Length: 235
Length: 85
Image 1 (tube, rainbow over the protein chains, first blue to last red):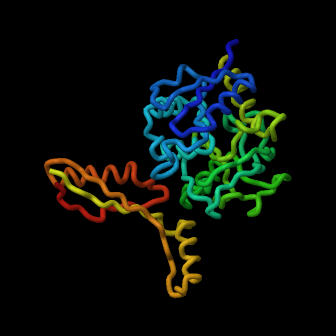
Image 2 (image 1 turned 135 degrees about the horizontal axis):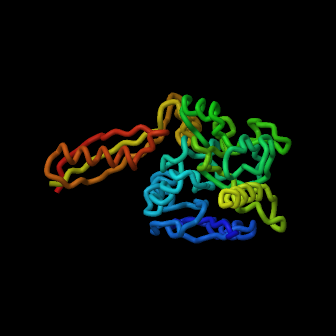
Image 3 (image 1 turned 45 degrees about the vertical axis):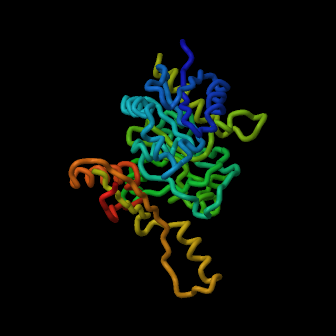
């Protein structure tokens, strides 16, 4: 059985790409570095758009990156039902590209927030949460200035009705409260998925939370879920 | 023929505008107690080259709707157009 591969796209301004590649390797997968000007994903099984400030976040976060050359391959990968994960800036890019519903705007407090948070898994119906149970609480760090998730009322209702909310900010005990919401996100939404479930975006950083030597390990669940669903799909 | 456009991007009504709110909150401290509902948007200027005015306007509108604004959170409109050299 071959090792599952995850392409990590580096845009000019990405800064979590190396951590993402390292996390994939630590969790038993093989990371493949891909450049934003590339036009294919190197045959990878999954793709991860990492955090950072792609193209300086000019105009809007993720707005320019959504039209980068590599994004045609990312769109095709998503359309084929294969796993796509956007973390932080990667989440913003997926929203701008229309691969995920909603948008991320300036934090309600206007300040950059960087701290550990807890998120509650709302659905296991994604390749990134398949190894979790709804209600599981993960501890992961956040670090962003534009993480306030917004969508119009109709889109929010659809998200809730179709189980497309994947993560919500919560207390350590899993209670979804206003105080646990670090950026003013509507309904404490920290991550969502597309209709099919194969495309997921979240503001917290699972790639910074896999190594017990340097902090919480809430990110392991996402990589374990992904790698075991890839292995499962291949057998 | 070159034409210069001004494109205005504004945050959708009803969406909280943290920047506008912060500007608004600073006004009473500066002595203005009669100013409210401050919203911060973006003005983008661009020059389009093309034969007809209609084609240039179509291009500007497409740029505006596909890239300059995100329809989920923003409204966009062309404010002005003038012939440029």
